[in-house]
Image 1 (cartoon, rainbow, N blue to C red):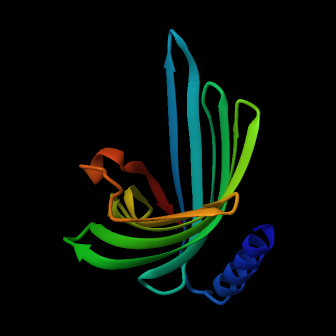
Image 2 (cartoon, rainbow, N blue to C red):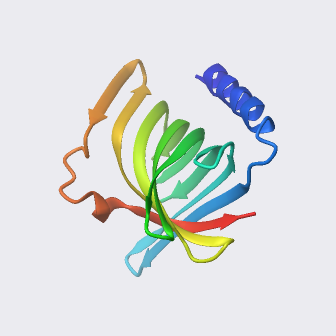
Length: 172
């Protein structure tokens, strides 16, 4: 699995190196929750991408998070295609991501490989800043400990917007 991720990152680096005129962007989201009767829960999820064409981009991402007895980290690559312009400021995109995830839950360590196809939207506020939203994945493949699971659709989620992740978008 590590060799696969290294190969994917090398391919991504080669592809983004050829996108000389593409603009770069950063996306980030942060979540924090603390209640009086429980430990704090947090997650930080940054992404960096490069537009190879006006509608297609490639990038890398990572996530770290912690709850009461669980620590999670994830690194991966993604490709994004802006396929629908809604009005002047909103763009709908499809995103393919490949990730290596590691979890330590109460001292039990697990690792998995994950591939996702998801949908989302960006809403530009001005030439540099915007808001982004990723809804639940439409197609998800997870491989861990010799077992794999494939999910198609919204996986039993009645409202995919209820599980959406929101973040800030900065283009430079």
